[in-house]
Amino acid sequence: MRTNYRRWSEYPYQGEQTPPKPYPAPAYYPMFFIRRHGNNAFLDPFRQQITWQIKHPLEINWGMELSIVEQTLSSLTPQQIRLAQYWGMEEATENMTPMIFSLAKKYRLSSPYIARILGYFHAAVNDAFVMSWHFKYLWDMARPNQYGRNLSPVLTTPRFPAYPSAHATVAGCAESVLSYFFPQEAANIKKKMESCALSRLYAGVHFKADNDEGLRLGKQIGQIVVRVLKEQNVNVH
Image 1 (tube, rainbow, N blue to C red):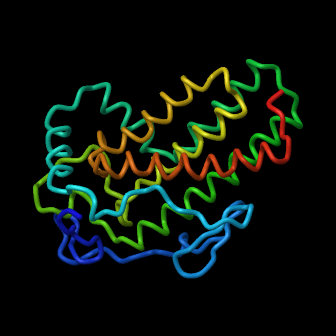
Image 2 (image 1 turned 135 degrees about the vertical axis):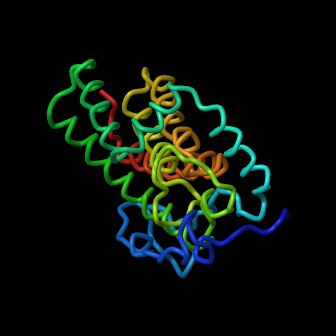
């Protein structure tokens, strides 16, 4: 185990006087593929308990993570700023859904099949959001702007805990699911989803570990969904 970490609920945001108020409700929203089984236990669709692969925050060197944020913000390129704005100034899925339609057009998929892809995709993303909120409020990890370092983030810091990044969790999940439906595009999809996760570091609102571990969590959720697709023989053509 490494050093302890600063709690989101105990420190004001930069320039504020009181800690932020929690809003954990999304952590308890219904899920499509994952079942709750006790306080912090979850079952997959095959009734097997899930062993989550995401690191406990005590395994991460947050001092080093803070240095990465500071170094990144001090040397941002115009392209990195545009990437932060592209993914962060609207819902991440608002940029992902057009990808699905574009790929569907490229591969001449029928309307019923497109509807099926969208259904599975959005159901999977729902579960990714819920699980990201579960871990956010379970671990209560502070944001970079709660460390008193006078940071200058590109975007406004969201009002909920940092770890893991919801953007990254959704991106990892999307990578797994969309790569199943469009295997020929797996490399491009991976690159796009990794840029979504990385954009949160460029924005100055997340630590690199938030994004790396969010991707890991999202991919695990996506693979659970892919197993369902395979079991149900949902073909990719």
